[in-house]
Length: 364
Ligand SMILES: *Cc1c(COP(=O)(O)O)cnc(C)c1O
Image (tube, rainbow, N blue to C red; front, side, top):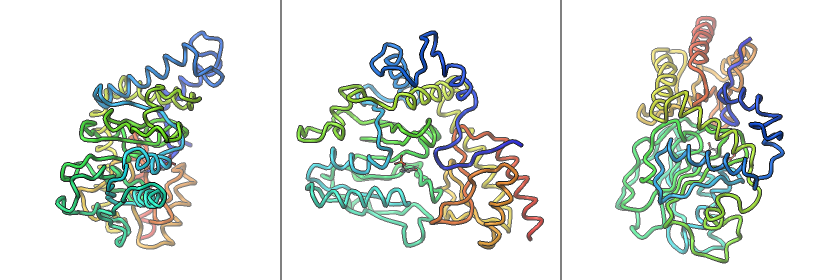
């Protein structure tokens, strides 16, 4: 039975990447060692991390005045590191279009009890279960604010921001965890981008942070592990990095570049894959998408529901038996969620559509 893994993260990885990792597992390129047991100060690992950075710079067209870091603590630690390093006594706005954005805002509020800065909820769509990206008036943003925090893809609710909002000249900080390398963004439009790797880049354990140099902090009192400047100056080797996760991420970057052809091609494939599913849901009077506006539709996470909770549970159970794994929606939204990240094959979407048609015919 073919298994398709719809997990929202950790998520499916490109098969050729796993095969290469398997082939190199015991002896990495004639070193007589596995990357798993290699010193992070060795010349071999030095090449791996430099290649990983170089490839990511090329794929995302990251300008030279931005630092790239491979950190630990997940995207969730960035909810604290961002205000700690960047807010510095100023206002920090949060555009909350989903549960992760709300968590980022909540962490900032907590931090502001001990560190002087002012987190402000710019807009939220929580009252409609985050079924759209909320609007706001740019003029309501204080020009002297430190940043506006956005989530480019709401992993749980299936909405995205493709066209960046007008923030009255205030720099944008983005949580790009679930659509980095899946859609094209201009890095110059951001002060800082962060992303947990386990959705679109690689295995869990590494978090990519891309920050414009002039946003590196100037606060020597910060704990070293939480200090972007120290981490960046050490080339992500201040302490032992998640070496194996960085190695797999490097292989994924190579796959996006060499096999797919780059981020624009990747984005095109993702629009096609997700388009098949959206078109099917739209013509069906059995399945519905909880996302209100077509323009907000995520290409990487597509939630949908049947007419009842009972049928949703039945769908998930039958799907699982047929090899469509991890398609249950997040508990806060219910129903189903198909996460179609970069490595998810188009055939998996076509096979899912066949199953959806059959299920609809059975239960209509
Ligand atoms: C998964 C996710 C997170 C949390 O990531 P961790 O690495 O588990 O901390 C944060 N933001 C978004 C948008 C996510 O999808």
